[in-house]
Structure formats: C-alpha cells, structure tokens
Length: 278
Image (cartoon, rainbow, N blue to C red; front, side, top):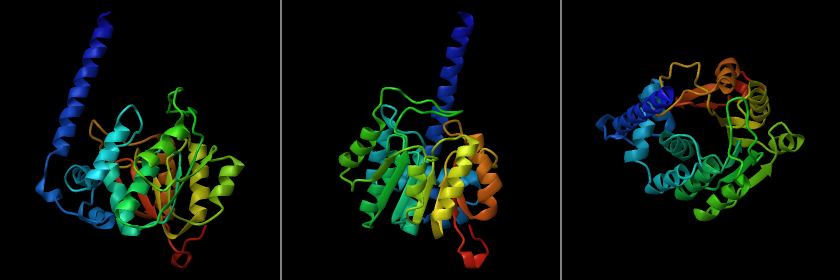
C-alpha cells in the first residue's frame, strides 16, 4: 500500500515537472521570433536542443492557427503522438521543399498525413498523400495500441473533418509484398518512416524507401535520436533503439543530414552525380 502511494506521488511530481518545463518552453522568446525555412532554422540554431526549442516556439507563437487547431484535435482522446514542435517542423519542410508525392510508413490514426494535406491546402500546392499501415493494434517491441479503435476510419475521418483531398491508403505491413510493390510503384518526393520500431523492419523500410526516393528528396526518420546529443526535456523523448540504430549506421553515412527536431531526423538524398547511388 505504501509503495503504491509513493509511486502515485512520484508520478504526480513528474507530471508537475513536465508541465513546468512545457510552460517554460512555450513562453515567448524574442530570439525565436523569426519565420525561417527548415534549412535556415537548422543553420541558425545549430544544436539539436536549440532547433527543437525554436520549432516548439514557432508552433506556439508564429505558425497558422489552423495548425494549432489540428494539433489540438489529435491531442484529444489519444488520437496522435508526437509533439507540438513537429507540426512546426512539417510546416517548414513543406513550405521550403514543396514535396508533391508523399508517403508515410505507419499511419496510426492519421495525424501526420492529414497535417500534410492541411499544409498543402494552406500554401496552395498539390500534394498526393499516401500511407501504408496495418490500421490495426499490431504493436512491436516498444509499442502497444488500443484494441477498440477503427484506425483506418479515424484516418479518413480526419481528412473529411479538415476538408482535405482524400489520401491513398494501403492496409498492409510495410514488409508485405503489396506494400513493397506500392513503394516501388513510383518515385517519392518525401517519405516519413514511422512504422514498426523493431530494428529489422526499420532497416528494411529504410532500404526500400530510399531506393524509391527522388534525387534531392526528403526522408524523415521518426523516433531516431536516441544515440545523438539531443537532451530531451521532460515532455519529450529521444527515440527508440531500432530507428536510432538505422540512422546511426546508414542514414548519417549515406544521406545529407539537414537537421533534427527532437526525435525526428531529416535527411536529403544526394543525386547520383554527387557520389551516392542506391
């Protein structure tokens, strides 16, 4: 009984510390009050913690109200993971690189892909959004998901709610033949790998996706800063071993690292003429 009480007390204290850090990060800071592209921000705020803080500030003080409303919707009822800073990251990436053919591996309930559609609408650009996901509570070594959610319906409902062009969604594991065929069916301007966190699957996702990424295309690896020098505040975290190891072993050596917002690492594929071929 006493141990249970102590655990509850520690949990409440940790929550209070997290809220205090969140308030501190969210306050207005003049040095962050500037509207930059992703590349400009990564150059100006050269450490991982500075760029993360800038993106968090951007979300709360600079970005469109529609993005904050979208984040608020997905923050309710367990609809989405991630952080406020990631909404700002996607805004900066889409505005700078304007990717039209976009793919997410691991959709969950549609937060990221519907955000892509919303940003494309706000900046008046065409975007063809694709997602590959089991749309079921299949977990992995580090993740467990609710059993009573219609994941596919939730993702489609988000597009309807925000009046967005319907996405192309494939219900499959990323390692299924149907998924591999879909990945190989075209070249992609942008790919976000956010599926199974097990090393073997992430490794496979990386190899298959980079092969189909256009020269100059953008790859974002989720949950992948565990072995970096990012020091996450209480409301954040650095990632999981599987994605982080793939980033360390492969992406950092084979691609151009543009910057990282929290546990999202952003890369650009080199043209073949610059010395790298898949």
